[in-house]
Length: 406
Image 1: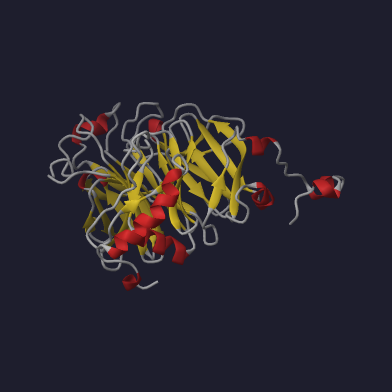
Image 2: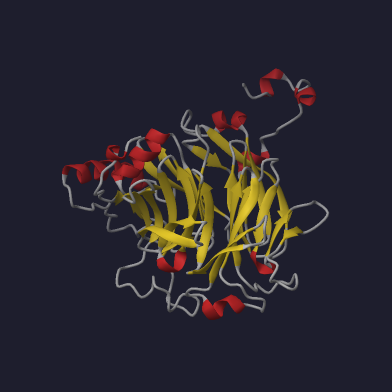
């Protein structure tokens, strides 16, 4: 897609949500009126008897164009609202589809699997296409992720997660300041920690938080401080952040403002300086970050599709954790949502802005090509109880009338 295929000055229209079914029909007319009346930001007005949805939001029409043209959908986690959000185009409208989890944060996804890190568990889902025909309305979905297993880690403050080239899940265990993998015999298996940490203790000594994979293996991490005392990173949060190379144990960048979400993309290392509300490229030769653009929120959660960066924004409150940051010293309003930036030009090409109870975003993950309108079932969904995945030899014994058609 070329950049001129999306509006350069997009207007916002209300987002349809499954929590507020009446919004979907009103969204279509609102998007049309937005195109007809540039400069307006129409919103679906609730009737006098209705309360605004706590999960309401608005989006630019360019988001529909982007996701439809790219044939993609995006997962977003919000630990603050205890939701997983699916951004998907349904019936020509951007649909924000919510699922409930306990403090969801890190997540990763492939065409086959989704993993979500929650308060004290990692929940694994498998894409089971045979379930799709059983979901109403028929023909609307192209993937269905069904819960397959849960691994209890205990409260290790799971942050980012990523599948490696062999399908093993790597976890940033922020509470213990380490990278970890999972084994059924253990809560978690520590695999790497910064060499400046003298002990493996649940004390959040440096606030290790972000993980970038290169060639299917862990390579770069971010932390909010080069500190070795409980919560020590808080003392210099404004510019004490670091970026490290896992393979060499070298600190590549210092002086970062609350860095998150390092990513290796198009042979470049990207990072979000959350304290500045910025996205930038890392100059590995000089150990500096070149800011591409600043955004109206605490930047955290990053993924790419083509020339577009999908970036999570959080409002952040001016508490002890966030006070004194360059972002909170700006006069502009801070928002929560997902912003899309063209990484070739720095242009902001679209956004979804949450206006209800969703105020903080953690992870943003684009689902693979071909997954444009997925469903993800919560563990207690009735459909989960009547959907079975069996080995081929066992399936051959099931009466044909009961088998799902391929």
